[in-house]
Image 1: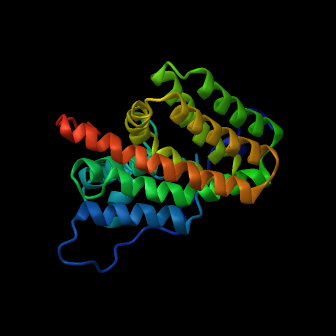
Image 2: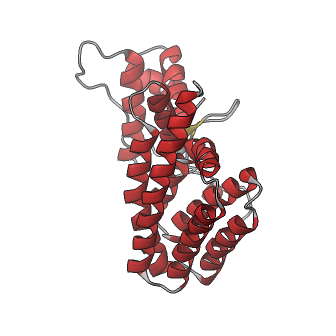
Length: 263
């Protein structure tokens, strides 16, 4: 079939039209429209890249102005649930961890949760990602994880470069778990890691302290390379046990200088 044929075009299923349902009295029209568009995606089994009907379609279905559906599309785009571009109909978007990252940063900045609490959650999640990576990683993924662990040791005098490899090390382990949700969750921690990790490294002032952390990362990498799920999980737990202590010290030092850990 020739390029640009009907077969090649994303589908616009409309066999299950949207419809308003009874809602709470305090729910706005925009919020109703957001729910209806989300339901349309679900009930029509749309997938990433599929095209949604435009603002006019939903406005007519819901009996509201296009301004309402335009605002609803904007809200869904901000949540990375749909992709909206000028002159094009909206498309279903890919899963994006930046939404989680924004919520976490807001919660930390407004003192609803602490960085240490996030690191405790990270410990639980990354123990599992390390174990999964040890079980299902490819040779290339194991090599990438090891390369980042080795590069950290080689960057001992360059905190910025060291921190870059530290963040990349954890990202590579998440990818090697072959669980898309773990990848998104771990990536959502990265904006906080980019601030907290360099501060933690600055608390490790002696060579033995730094070498201990380097060896811990290498232990995780070796366990994943050796397909040892138990050792990978245990090494990741030990890593976070030490890191939480370092984060607490960094926060204490920052507080004494009235210098918050996150901007």
